[in-house]
Image (cartoon, rainbow, N blue to C red):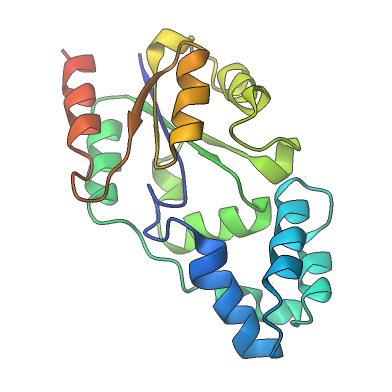
Length: 192
């Protein structure tokens, strides 16, 4: 058996930099505040589990009741549902590895209907470590139960791909113009 590990933002979800593309404009529209440094800093703390999602919203002066409205702005990358279906049909385990706020990640995956395809997830705020720190990849390996040589990791950020590769994990640098061709090829070879 093999394990396909997907980054969330920029791979599963269309927005590669959800903070700049979605979160900052949302906060600016709702609170009138657009101090990017404050938002970035609060997001980093939330994504490390140092503050709760509710504390994040309080810090950026947006009611936490608007959280679901913000999360509804996320969209799936074209082709991801087909890739997940193909992996499931070939009995390949699929995991999500993401720098994100756990509660947000759970809601987005459920809202967009992909949670059913996943065997598990490792989210930075839940483990207190962000990519490219090697500790988050080690947590993934331990949680998934797979050996490094059984895993393919796909991410759209070079530093994350390099860090995984340094631990012996096979990697693919995701490029939207190519889509999931490399992952589909890997799945077909693993299914032989």
